[in-house]
Image (cartoon, rainbow, N blue to C red; front, side, top):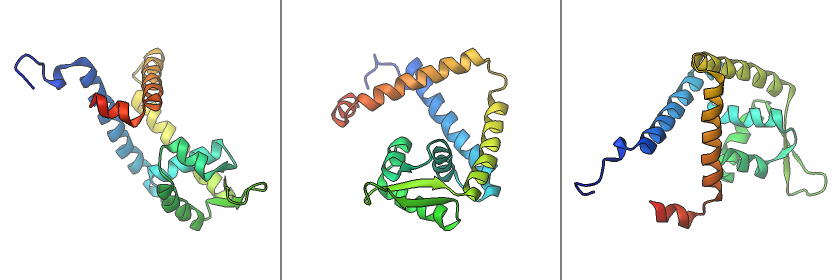
Length: 159
């Protein structure tokens, strides 16, 4: 970095990115504390909520939605299965594909966790007007689209 360049933390885009990253990290910590009594952690909650929304999703589809690798899934799913929160069944047409569903206990626990999570989000964002929340959401969705279309070489070039 030379003397003519501004420090990255003085740049509005960098400041915005750091703000998002810190807010995300602090929110993850708050969610972790809020759902601790349910005996689950945020990665479990992500799985349960997705199964609540997309009953019968394959393990591979779930991993793609959560942006995690299969190894991560293969560590988390048995924990939920052991607690009788999820079921894994072979696909009727392709036995290599495992389909995931919530059990009755899993559905109940997920509903409790979603009440806690949405309550936390409402409390944190209650002072922010809805139109501003939507602007932030749209900005983040734009970033997601850009990052999802970039390949590894493009990311490395920009670094």
